[in-house]
Image 1 (cartoon, rainbow, N blue to C red):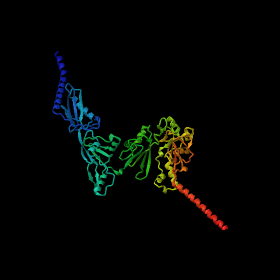
Image 2 (spheres, rainbow, N blue to C red):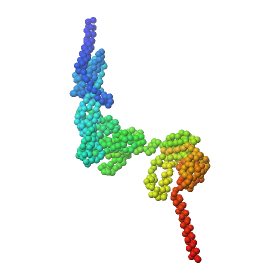
Image 3 (cartoon, rainbow, N blue to C red):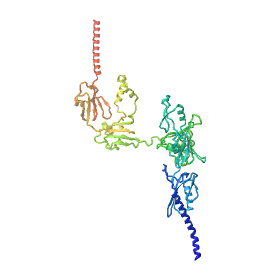
Image 4 (spheres, rainbow, N blue to C red):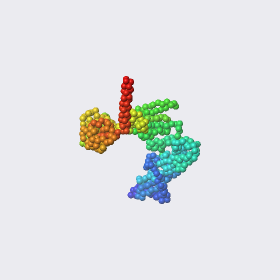
Length: 571
């Protein structure tokens, strides 16, 4: 029995000692927590949650350690300037430079060697701040303070931003007028020509920025690619001791450009490593109408002014070939062109107004599409449709310029020649873009020659019947006269009270409602909606008549004189 008690005591004693050690360590942790409680500074602005597989731990990072058990204890620790994590009851552990996930694993393993608990939690609660150097073409070069999630663009912003190009206008010769606003300045500063030229030579490069690390490695940053394409790799994270160098733009290096069927065409500073994929990323990719099966590159031959065209054929079903084409390197001054597919998704529509059952816009689904088809699609005509007054306008022709007409519009009638007067008069009367057709002949008589082919943006107008004829001009009672079928212009003039004093009877005109055509015969059959126009007799007509009368009289006198002389001679 005594031996059994001794055996049980030997088995339980190590566990009891470990429990005492754990309790002692927990007591040390509790005491340390009471003695040293870190006050958290204000949380910095960060672009996204910290990725523990990317973030590197460094001096100044603050961790919260929580050890669960009967009495949960927690304490915050800060990584020392030497890069160590000082744990209560343990020796310090080097974690600076480690990835966050790895640092947590190291600290957890150390704590479990002392604390008898499976509930150990380590959380990064405060990012460190450190200084980096920004030099080169920035407005305020020097040391800037950043946090552990800062990128190259953040440090450059803290340094006052990049030196930008001066305004693209010549410097005034008068020194009193040489006021320019410098980048990131709120005050006007007078620039001498030398200062202006110096500033122009110090324009910052957005694409050739590099970062020197303490381990002698060099990273490249391309802020233009980051801004245009959202490439985060082109805007790397910073670590302690980084030196950012912003060079000036090297004009002799040249540019690369992309134009055509891309979303954002443009020209960009050329840097080593540029390829087709990079340029497409900065141009935001192909536009929807791009003919992406071919990419054209215009390239200078050596150092001459001669160029050559390089055509890259792309089979987008072949992933390997696509990768090779997009990785094609570019040279300085290369110009990349992407063709557009002709008539890609061209939206062809017409509009029908007036007396059809379903007026509105309609798509031209096939080529050709004829007038009768679209009227049928619109539900046909209503009972009030005036086919004699219906017409089609080809709207793109409405805006077409006529140089001769525009020239004549600035001339007086006296300055025009006879042919010019006639041309100007006829062009003034016409309806621009009017399509020649006859709705009555097509839809009532079935004459298919008037079934015209429709074009994009055509306007079909079918007016309503107005059951009247308008008589205007020199008649006694001008106005609307009730329409009577198969009657001529003289009938409506008579109903309007007949000709007025000064009416020019020989110049009566009938304007057709549909086409605007002017017919000159008074016996022309008038249709519903037509206009009968009786003009005023011009004074020139009376003058001509008087001249003719005088001429006849003079001729008569001359003949009498000649006859008298003849008879006198005979006798």
